[in-house]
Length: 308
Image (cartoon, rainbow, N blue to C red; front, side, top):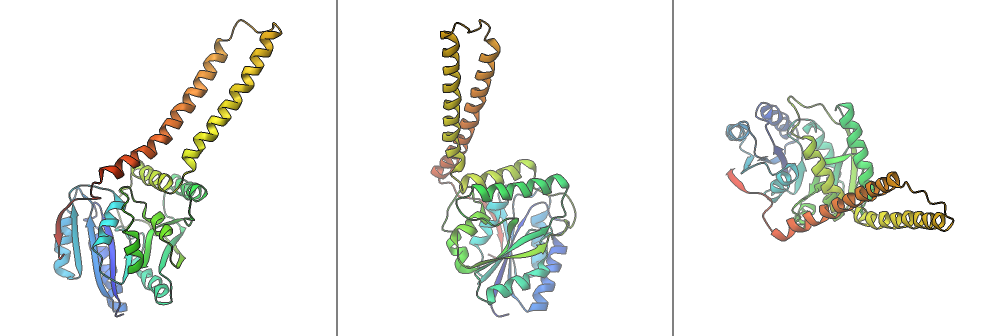
């Protein structure tokens, strides 16, 4: 295959199984005669992942290594890698072999046949029950709330033509949600079903807080519904307050208003107090993102590079 291929891999605490990943990728390179560039982005690993990348680069000369100065998060690490990709076809895969390199040739065939993007649609997930339920619910909520159509059960695993990457990088968002950006830029896209594998070894670097951050980035970056929901809540609250006021005034005029109203007052204060806090929280999420954008900080800081 004469077309130059770039594969972007965000790396986090993957020292022990990076050799397995490289072996699997190199096997596909040889079998398919790829002109390959492999960009490994170490996202502030606590182990010796970057030292492993240095050793692997001596064996696989097509490796480009990038070490970030700290952990900036999966999405930022991938975006950083995309900035250094020079191939005409660019793939994004995770470092844990859950997205098997063996199916990449089939994905690239779609680009050869006129598509600009081929993204993976997870047919099965070998995850714990709670995680599977949470992921399933998130994608469906996101699709309902989003201003654009973001395909269900898709992650960052995909292959894209260079022109798509160039347009994605024009969106200089400080909290990037790449699968949403990929859908937003458009072009001719196709979903390809595959069975996601279990991790090669170890535990996922995705903690609950990191997963929630990605979920919030997806919802608040591509939906105006949460902020509009506040207006609807306000209208519902006003309707409830109006009906209750009419009810109280009627009882007062009829002389039937009981002296004891402590419980009612507490319930109303609690209800509207909670409603106010929820609304402030939603507004705060949008304000935080505005604040991040106005600071105009770089997405990441690169501490060291190899072969770049």
